[in-house]
Image (cartoon, rainbow, N blue to C red; front, top):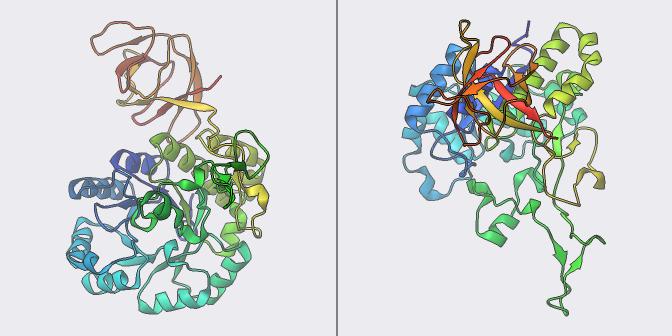
Length: 413
């Protein structure tokens, strides 16, 4: 049984569907963006009505919802901010995530009873800054990604016992210090600290010498150019004991702009790993390869432990391409529970699959199973051999029970 006082699994929720997936697949809490003051302008984000539905859904399943307001504010941003925070409190949000001291002061005054979590964007690298935020009323500090396990342990030792430490444990890494990537502004006019990062870290670069314009030389001798800023993805699923012993309370997964399949897969794997460790440490140790295989089913770059065990070397970058490793396709999601009489369930197609193909059913909890698709029908009741149309609704024959929100995946051959 998970000890809620020891570890929290915190998942991204870029929209309402992802919120529900995250909660059902095992997240203790989710972080979302409203339509104002967040750093993910291209995420769908939540309207007031969606936020209310999402908060009610999470609370009904024993999970919490944290709302991001982590911009660095300019003068005009403060107009209406206090009312926005009061609205969030009324909707039932459990905390606000803030970077800017001015925004923090507005929230402290407008919603004094709400928890405030200090974002990693505030560059929390030491215990003195954490103590200062605590003295101002912060409940939690999200440590900077540049800290090692040892540094986090020191912060934990020197801050108040009732202040939480949250740390990123999985997902994409920013090549720039604490997410301050100014190339996005310079090259595309899109402000990374206003949620519009163009991700130039994933672009291909060549070198141009000042007196020889037009001569494009590869930074590394490779005919495809080089991706000199392209970092590997963080993955700490094999190091959960170190994180817990260092005093990390909230294990944060990056990815509000990722797919429902990514959210469900990663949350499910970390949920299993955390629960196993807290139940039986030897069980966790024996299943590390399994956890890594499970979390790898979501598309990802090569994995790294980033700064946790020392400063990253040149091996923490991917120089040859900017693509993902994708071993599985997300082909469908169950929309209605299994019908015992017909042996079928309604599925929404996400990618093409066919009769005769082997698929894997990935449930929110428990073991998955593989099966060969035997029969399926379209919305008109016509038997079909394939599901080629995006978001097509199908009735699929299953050889055992499935539930709403179970995912169907197939291995990429």
